[in-house]
Image 1 (spheres, rainbow, N blue to C red):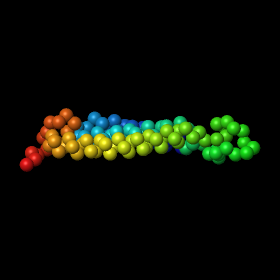
Image 2: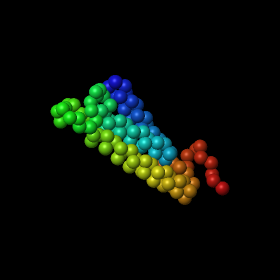
Image 3: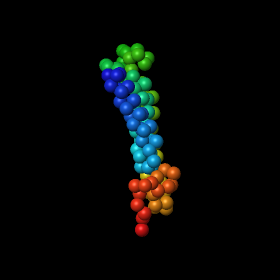
Length: 121
């Protein structure tokens, strides 16, 4: 299970970095989204919840109150917060992308028209 999770995090990170280096703003936004998904998986895996079996999520009577017997709730809370913030930032980036494309007439990151972009009337 650890190998699959590590490969998933690696593929998401590699794809996100590759998309961040692309010249179009939509591809940059998608790269940031993939990187945020990779970070969320990494944070979630650090809590041992996804990799632990038979651990209680809440306190049970008769079980010692240490993290050896329970799932750590902090990575779950951090991941949920990161998902909400990532969604809001993606929405903001898309609005800025549309405004920038409307004013500049191109969606390239540096603001110049590429060879594949036709003139807008």
